[in-house]
Image 1 (tube, one colour):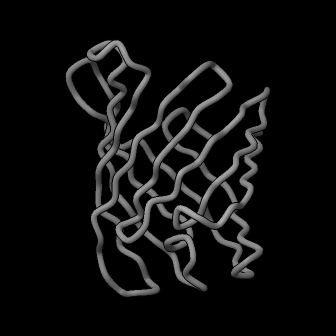
Image 2 (cartoon, rainbow, N blue to C red):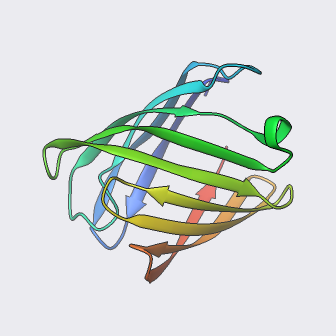
Length: 140
């Protein structure tokens, strides 16, 4: 929609859940400062219902470390458990098209490998570190 606002629809067939997916970059990243991102999505992977609302700090550390990594930390409030949890993760860009992530939702770690092509992204996720699934994103 706008350079700092992403709006979408998220569909989770395992939970029969459809809901809004929103990310807003409240503070942009600089050489010295991490980005502050606010958003909402479905609750943790594996919950049957509920929304989550989160705030994260993220920083691309490629220039500082020489490695193509971008970690994040934050907090997420989940409606399913009616509580806030610490969250975090890391993204590694192997090429312009291939990346891997480890996502910690406050309870479990979910590894993800993604391939991007044009406006599409397809990924293989291991929910709770063991249950394989597929992700698909389309940008318009």
